[in-house]
Each structure stands twice: as C-alpha cells, then as structure tokens.
Figure 1 (tube, helix red, strand yellow):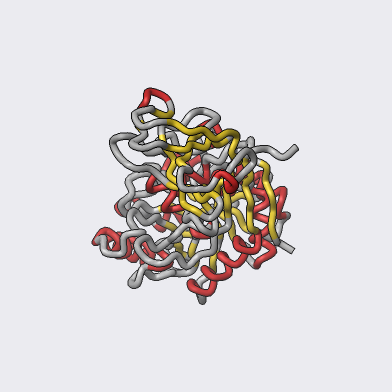
Figure 2 (cartoon, one colour):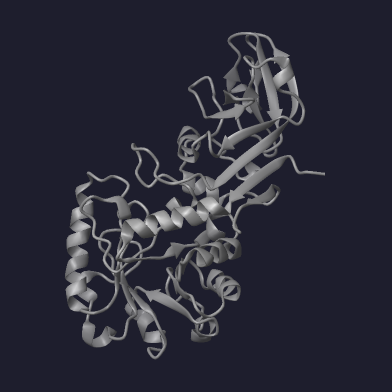
Length: 356
C-alpha cells in the first residue's frame, strides 16, 4: 500500500543544479552544503549523487552529519563542519572521520589539534559565529585549510551590507595570503559584484530553491511533494472549515480533505483564513487554495471549480514541484522554502528519479 504523501526526489535535477552552479562559479571550485540531513532529502543520498556529479568538497552543520557523510563518500571527499569544534566534542570525533571544523573562536582553536585540518570562520556582519576582524592573528592561527565568512543578505542584491561584508572579508584575506577563501552561498554566487574567491558553497539552490528572488529561478525543481485526497464534501455559505473556524465559505463550496498536516512538515500557517489568502496547490491541472488552519495530519483545499470526475479519494495534489514553485508555496504559507524542505516528515513515500 502506498502512503498518502509522496515525495519525489529528482536526482538528475539535483546533479544538474550543482553543475549549473559549478559553471557559474568557475574557475572557483564549487562545494555543496548538505546539512540538515541533505536539506531533508537524506544526507547520504545527496552526498553520493553530488559526488558522482563531480563535487569533492562538502559542508555539514554538525559533526554527526559529517560522520554519516564520510561513511557514504569514502575518503576522497573533503568535509567541513560549519558549526565548528562543537562544545562537548573531542578531537577524535572529527579525526576519526577526517572532518575539518570551521573554527570561530579562540576557545575552539585552543582545544583543536593544529596538526589536523581546520578552517577559520570570520564574522563580517552576521554576529552569529566567527572571529571578529580584530581577533584575527595570523601568527596564532596559521595552518588553516580555509578562510570563510557568511553573507547576511545576499538574496537582496541591492542591500549595501553585501558590499560592506565583501570589504571586511578582503581585509581578512589580506592577513592570510594563500589560504583558500570562501564567501558565496547560493545567492552570493549570483551577486553581480560578489567575488567567488576560491570556493563557493551553495546549499538551497542545489535543491531547487530560487537563489535570485524576484527573478526567474535558474535552478531545476529537485523535489516534488504530492498528497492524496481522502474525502470531498460540499458546504453552504457561512459554514467554516478547520480548527477554530478561521475560514468561512462565502459561497457554496466543495472541499477536499488531504492526508497530511503539520506533523508531516507542512507549515502551520498554510491555509487561507477570513483574514487573508494562503497558498494554492495543483489538483487535476488547476490551482486550488488551501483553506482553514492546518491540522496535525490533515489539511483542506477548495476544489469547487473542479468537476466531480476530476477529484476524489486518491487524487493527488502537488504542493510544490515542477508546476508549483517551492518558494511561492512557502511565502504564501508565511515561511521560507528552507524551512519547508528541512522540515519534511518521515511519513512520505520517497520516490527517486534518475541518478543513473
């Protein structure tokens, strides 16, 4: 029996997205960020697919993710741990899987075995992780395999903070001549004035997210989420749908109940209310709005304008994929595509396309 939710992962699209980004960043190398369990798709699956596409440098968030990636990739790939030398971890936790922490504090650096590979994280405006510029001391920090920082607003090409961060990173680079440098994330790759330096490290764009908001998405959709209809019903004007009666029918309305909810990673804020519209899903070739509050295991779509023959138990709705943009679905749900992808639940049937 097939589960009611189907998550299709297009491995050819994932691979093509990396190659598209690698062409954009050349002659700089192009890495791949596979944190958060490969953005919800499975860290081993994503790592091997991108390795076979030509990627040789990977970034994870936690040491545990790095251990999983190393087991899948073998020893040829390089793996950096973005969160650094984690509190409570031991050097052996990294050394055993040949993982390089991106160190961002003097305390981390003091604990690390400098004979082993590591990176340096410079804070240029995020105020999250990393050394401040004034803390950088090449005499004490020599031997790094990578110097990196992180854009704050690269998706907004007009934000003046981008230029300030680039200038700050240039000052850091000048202190560490010859050390490979990395600044560009997915959106940073497409900044008209943003240098790629030696290594770009895209994440979201690999999985089909739009790195250039407001413009056409240059990436292929790599993930499609479809949910089955369980039941349809007609309600009269003035009746409500969902918890707390937040959405009221203004006409005689046909509703379809779909077999997934926030326990499956769907945004709690998805669904129109009387206060405003929500996202739409595609059913039988037509966009249909989600209505009412999202339930734990169910949600509701308005399918009034679909003929009875087009929708019934088992009919599937595309929430995002080739014909419903992930970013559009997320924005209309009051969230971002990153959150939607990384929150994908475990109850979906996962179908793999391509990858041969």
